[in-house]
Length: 30
Image 1 (cartoon, rainbow, N blue to C red):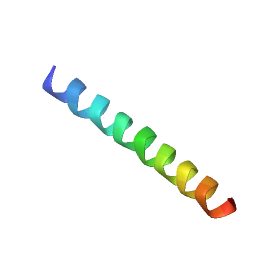
Image 2 (cartoon, rainbow, N blue to C red; image 1 turned 90 degrees about the horizontal axis):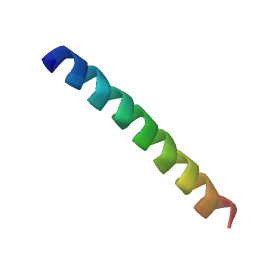
Image 3 (cartoon, helix red, strand yellow; image 1 turned 30 degrees about the horizontal axis):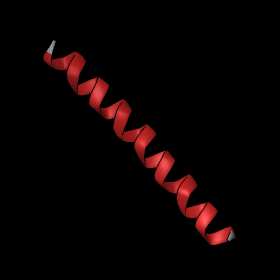
Image 4 (cartoon, rainbow, N blue to C red; image 1 turned 90 degrees about the vertical axis):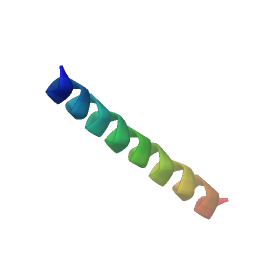
């Protein structure tokens, strides 16, 4: 379970980083 949790956390971090990048792009365009 520990390994699965680590993989899950890594995936969430990647998605979170992608969202942050998209938000920054929106702010830059505006």
